[in-house]
Amino acid sequence: MQKLLLIFKIPDLRKKILIVAFLLVVFRLFAAIPIPGIDPARLQEFLSSSQLFGFLNIFAGGGFDNLSIMMLGLGPYITATIIMQLLTIVSPKLKSYYYEEGPVGRAKFNRASRYLTVPLAALQAYGFLNLLVSQEVLVSLSLLNILANVIVITAGSIFLMWIGELISEYKIGNGISLIIFAGIVSSIPQVITSAIATYTPEVISTYVAFAVLAIFVIAGVVFVNEGERKIPISYAKQVRGIKLYGGVSTYLPLKVNQAGVIPIIFAISILLFPQFIAQMTSVFSQSLSIRLNEIVSNIFNNIFIYSVIYFALVVVFAYFYTAVTFDPKEIAKNLQRSGAFIPGTRPGQSTAEVIARVVHRTTFFGALFLGSIAILPNITQIFTGVQILTIGGTALLIVVAVVLEVMKQIESQLTVREYEGIF
Image (cartoon, rainbow, N blue to C red; front, side):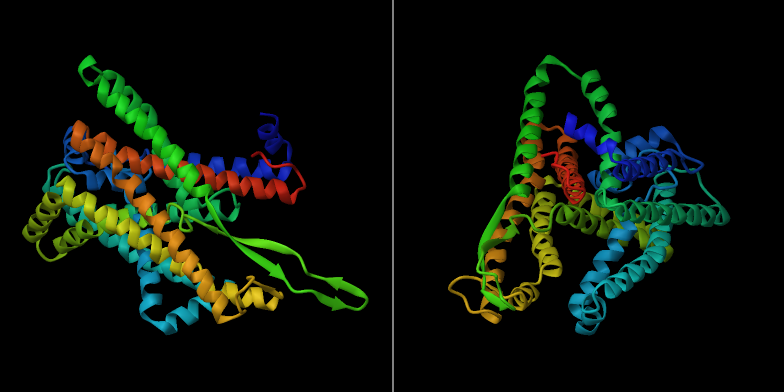
């Protein structure tokens, strides 16, 4: 407790934490402002009929429960980021343009993702509004009212994206992850209240299973996120003037789960993409849009099909994100420039191959773990029949991973200030 209180005794760190907390409060306030013309009873019935919209509510930080002006949440921005990353893989020119220019290229990449977010948010808002009107969740709106709501919802999504980037600049966790975290945590009191209200002695085994699952997920996520594969590194001795440098041994830490919680977020975004396409067809044909929405809902409401697709997407995105963010060749070059080498391995290409092989193996186990944890609540649902566990596992996975990430960043800031860490 003394170490936790130490965080608030450092003026600069205290200011950052309070600003981040204030931005999260602003987000929650705007997430409580609904758009006009909602039928609350029909809305709850509609949301409970599809677990895809339950996942969308995670991205929206709880803003989809009441169709707030931030009902789209960070979904359009995440989708835009995925599209941009896929384009950099398809086009070598784009990859060199965005990734080989260092921080300048990264800034250009982020700018392009923001620009792409605007049309995606507008199209998604229009599709959702038409879908909700067809399902009688919203009263029939005129074209002018629909366009006004599209502008407001798009602005809400862009504003939320801006809040997320502001949070990231203070280096107290990732802004996108923290916003999703805040939305999940804000729903906990309601979930507990509902669980108590619907409790009966006959379902005690379900509650026990959920508690065991929560403990397992928390312990597993902490274990895997803290897991590292250490590659031994030695530094060659160098003579500079009359002094001898180098000759020490250390290690290169490679995390088992290099991608963190990002594969889960990307996988959910892709699961929502067919629904997004179905909504977009409402621009051309209302009847076709309704039909496509029914087909997508029927497919993904099948828990077996949904679990297989979800697991595969998490595994694929774990490899994809690791490949995008971790370059063994660049690591090998940096080691060679600093006079470091892996004992028994030649510097350069051979070192890159060794690092790539180790990363591939660690990512394999990390991806299988993330995929297993993601669908474990679905497996529990098959045996218990409780739908809330389907979303609960993913939400819990995100919450634990975000907490660990925030703790790590606070730890690093304390270390920079020559304070002992909180771990």
